[in-house]
Image (cartoon, rainbow, N blue to C red; front, side):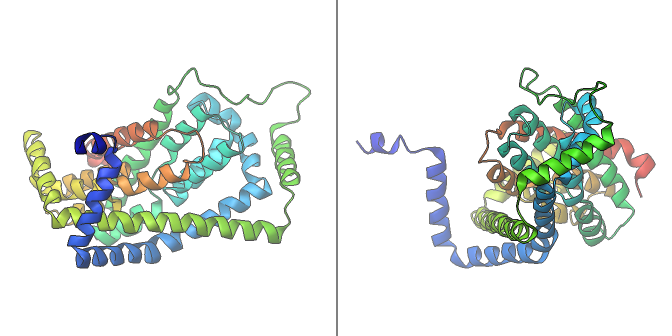
Length: 351
């Protein structure tokens, strides 16, 4: 009887029950980890992401996104099978880092300005680290080696570009937004871009004060979601560490590294980076392995982005029909390609 009652409970429900028991058994560790996650959110993520969330909302309202969409359409379609409006998302995603690209993609999908297939390609293409974190936090802050930034940037963004090229083959039968017609009746490209921006601004209709208020409200709501996920995953990692689960997982990763002929010290950054990108990058710098292997581990962590970022992206696109599976496959492929590019480019860009 009891077995028949418990059988319908999904795996997620069992996981939540186990976490609740662990929180009750290790309250001090959970509080310490939550405080650490809150500090990361307030000191690092809030000041770096909040302005970009506001700016992206304002640019959508002012029609700047539509301007770049019309202007970049002849470039984005042949390369990535994406409308020109994706060029703005790619730029903002690369400059501001995860999860800004996912947020912009979700907004465009909600307004039906991109199809589901195009949205999934955009999320796979734009989920990258921002240059400030890659250079300032990882290369200078963790590794104390500014020269390492060149090889990390080349491998991380180079692999992201390759992901964008490969993503064009995703859902080949899926619907696509119609391209801009090239005929004598259409105005020149630059004029058409300004007209698209003007039409989008008129269609939005909000005055500057209302637009700014909505942008701040939306950005604050998103930052609370991001902060909650960071605190949650910090507590989960501490629980796994307290129960010895992380040590067991690290032992299994060490065996795989040994079989691949790689230093066993890389197990810590790979395990930590599986869950959280900041902890994984920091562990890579402190692993004690040769520098080239440390850089490869850091590139893997930055490109995989951690389950915490995965949860942030999934929450941002949850209001649309964009699926998580293509993002997962893209992160797996991106991490492997970035790691391989470190070894290939080390002779040219390595310190």
